[in-house]
Image 1 (cartoon, helix red, strand yellow):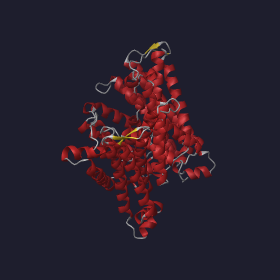
Image 2 (cartoon, each protein chain N blue to C red; image 1 turned 180 degrees about the vertical axis):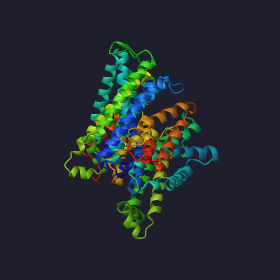
Image 3 (cartoon, rainbow over the protein chains, first blue to last red; image 1 turned 120 degrees about the horizontal axis):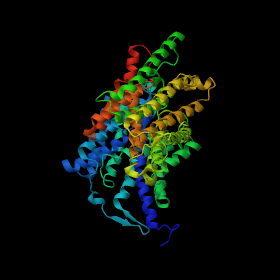
Image 4 (cartoon, helix red, strand yellow; image 1 turned 45 degrees about the vertical axis):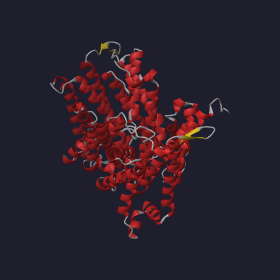
Length: 295
Length: 332
């Protein structure tokens, strides 16, 4: 077996895979943030809590109703999306005429409420969620062992990200969405129901977060705090990538996951902070972000 | 930033006479505040010096934060970094180097200033929502640093039983009451400094930038230098508050650098009234008292805080002092 700079290949590729998985979550979550920000001009601080909700809804579906992983993969995002629609109609709708910062503060408050409620009910120790039977075991690729479920997470996230990109960039609905992002008043004048579009967009963004949550449930334990720290990293990812481009969000998410994985191999102490350090460097070199447009 | 401006104090006073009237009113309030702080320890039930010190430290923290948000229009979501780092530095130097309180507080404050300069010069490169996200992410870096260097921070345990030592090497701070008066004096000085800054020509330019940045640029002001200056000043005062807290409460812990602390200081300012001089003080008193009374409820405190956030943003954007100010038609 060959060695790279004294690192056994199993360890290297294992960490790279883990990085790719984290990168999948960064990509889906930052994509959701970017879609919501584009149309609502709100940074959705509740995103981490909604990711956590996705995992919990899957857990509840399994343990309370007996609905397994595959239906939950669709049902949990839909249920979370519906709660998102309610949040948009009840709260966010009232803030569009105000400064963006109030949206951040309101969604931060909502995140505290949701996380607090789940912690009260489920405790903070975390609940196990089994890997579905079809995806247990793994493949020996010669240079590393690939657990089937982890491979599935990367493929599923890539598919969802690319599908989102396709909907927004290539379909008629996406064209309406981009038009409304560019100029809501004019789009409405053309007879498109922009308020409905805004509500559905928020629901869709929340659904994306919940989808990531269901994917994460079998890998990490289902825990009320699982989204709280993650969302801050995703914020850094968004600052690095800039929110102007859908493809940018996807590429940055996966790329930073890989960088984080590499850091775990070569300098583990910095693995928790490497994304923030990259953010600082990007701010120094290209303040608008890698894919950002200067507003 | 227009809407934050709407809830804050007006940038330009109606007339010199009105300005003088307001200044007189503020002086009265300030004297009243000083007198209250003087007698508060003798009042039963609430006159519990340990609790009062905590409130004063957080009140100064909130005032420092409000200097940036209310007058500079800059929402920092990472103020726990300066507060927490300063708290660690001050606790560490007091405990392991045996420094006197004034020196350890000075070092803690300086660490807040240096960190503020570093983070501020990065964060001011972006505006609005990005600014908030950058400050939050940078502060999270400080949190991880604190978590990973238990030799300096004590890790999960924090730095406990921080000694108070003798002030200037002479005056013993053994009792809570004597420490309380030190904290109260520093607090009053801090608030007076912030008041002075707000009403200086520098403060006027800040408000101009808050209200209309493009216009301030076109008038020839170097906007970024003003932003950085107020950022550093705010981080320094947050550091002062954190250092005092470490000495007063005799504990520096991970709670001080956690993002939830950054959220709490935003909440205090929002409840009290952003862009008002006295609002953050009231806000800090309300939130700390609430935490004290609801301490038995565990995680429900988070839910209550979240609910207050939502209510404030939806229907109570002026905050307590902002509403009173509107009521008596004077900026407070």
